[in-house]
Length: 256
Image 1 (cartoon, helix red, strand yellow):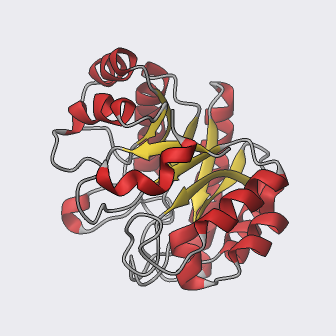
Image 2 (tube, rainbow, N blue to C red; image 1 turned 180 degrees about the horizontal axis):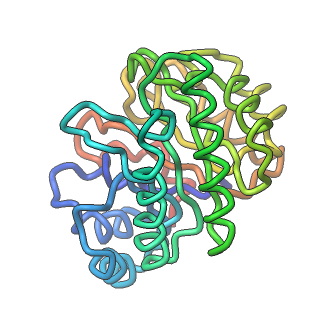
């Protein structure tokens, strides 16, 4: 049975962010993830998760300046000191909620050697630093349809990057929505890359809505992932078409 985590940055959008922890538990989720928690005090996030009875399993490193359209700074030359500071900030938030895993967004930039070198060095630093405090680092490829100009766009590119970084504490966050848009062949790719995958995320294609609204056969994929022995979490990172709870009919068999 897949361990589903509600992405409370996207689910339950009618509620204030801090109220979504309790809403997720009421809907049957035992696990949550979120994107960028940095507008909220770490201790308040910890209290909301504890009071709701949910475990936080993933969030992202700081994205840079979203007002300027930044989607991560890990590949940006000249921002290395800021990136290292962002790792420390993320550690504070992750430790407060006992989050075992942080995702590093590569950022926007041309796929040239200068940006690649910076990204490799920053991922190596983050993997080592997070390893010191018992937190796993993941990084993800994102589709160009969702984020034009994103540096990291495919699973093969991501694995090559991880090999170059050479740190066992760096794994792949494989997002089925992005990879269906970019590559397809989800079942065989997950099977081939399973030892490198640290986290999965889902949304249907093309609308990035809940499973059952698009072209991906999630019932088949969940059974396939179970057969492969994947023991991690699957983050529900999608935009509900309507009421979140009404849209969770696809997940009833997996929730408690």
